[in-house]
Image (tube, rainbow, N blue to C red; front, side, top):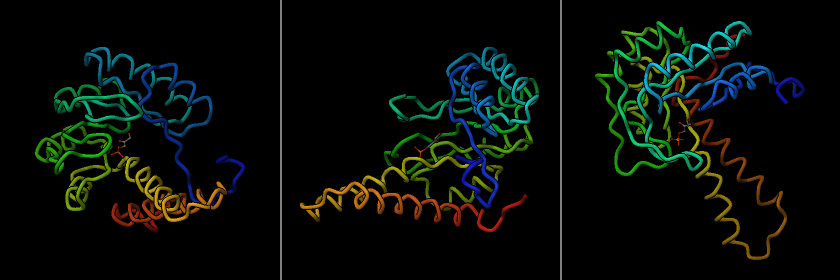
Length: 217
Ligand code: 13P
C-alpha cells in the first residue's frame, strides 16, 4: 500500500509490541521501516539479549528498533498488564548493550482508558532521557492531559502512541449514526463518517504534538 499509493509525505511503517524476534524479522522483511521488540515481561538480561538479536537483523537492513523497559499497564488487544516503572539503570543498559534507536520507558502510562487522571513519572522521565540520550516513545498516549503530553515531549519523547482515542471516536460515530437512523443499512454511509472521525483525532494530535508542517525528506 505504501509503495503503490503515491503518498506525498514520508511514511513510517512501525510494528508495535512484537513479542518474538521472528515476528520482528518478518516485519523487516516485509518492508517495515521500524519495529518494536517488547521484552518487558522478560528479565532484563533476556530482554537485552533478544533485543540485540532484533537490532542486529534490523540495522543491517536500515530498519530502526524500539525496546521497552518497565511495563505499560492496561489492556491492549486483550493483553492485560500492570504498571511497572522503568528502572533508569536498566534503560541505560538496554540502550548501550543492544544499541536501540528508541526507548519506551514505562512511567505510569496505560493502554486503553485511564481510571482517573494519569500520573506520569516526570522526574524519572528526565533522568532516563538525559542518561540514555535516545528518543523516548510514550505508550498509552490516549487520555493524557495536554499539559502532561507537552511536558513529556519537552523531556525527550519523540513518538507518542495513540490508539484508544481513535477507536473511541470511530465507535462513538457509528453508535450515533445507528441510534439516530433506524433505517440506515449501507456500510459505506455508516463507515465513512467513522473514518473521518479518526482523521479528526489524528489531525488534533499532530497539532498538539507540534508535528504539523515538520516533514523532512
Ligand atoms: P492507547 O491505548 O492509550 O491509545 O495507547 C496505544 C499504545 O500505546 C499502543 O502501543
